[in-house]
Length: 139
Image 1 (spheres, helix red, strand yellow):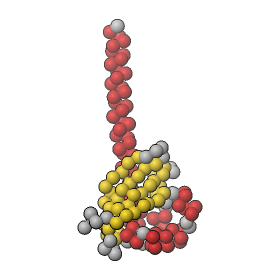
Image 2 (cartoon, one colour; image 1 turned 180 degrees about the vertical axis):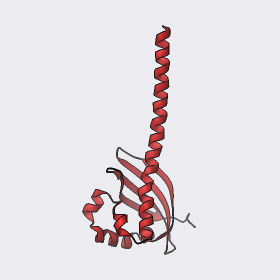
Image 3 (tube, helix red, strand yellow; image 1 turned 90 degrees about the vertical axis):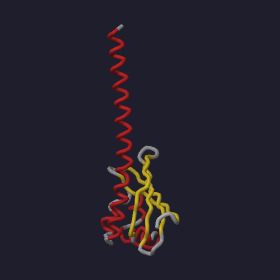
Image 4 (spheres, one colour; image 1 turned 30 degrees about the vertical axis):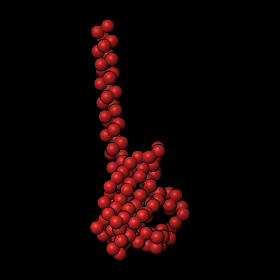
């Protein structure tokens, strides 16, 4: 009887440790999803579209070659193409292989936006798209 209780206690401790490790791993993975977004924004600031393109998902790379990608970003997302400020405010894991990163961005044009990035896991997190909206909260 004592042996069963000891075994049960060890099993419970192991499960608690695994749950904590899984929670820490999820947090780490969610934070890791923000890295490509931040690095891509830094590349855009340097007008380094070759590097920025490396953070794009396979789907984006299929739809846009490198030159078309640059044109799309410059025309469609001027605040992202030339930001002066960016702050990641939220990261979360979605369905398997998806993550979402929310970023407050101020463009050189003086306008502020909030971007919701979707990332997919493709041997690392890759940016699969962004939806933006005006953000009066960025000063």
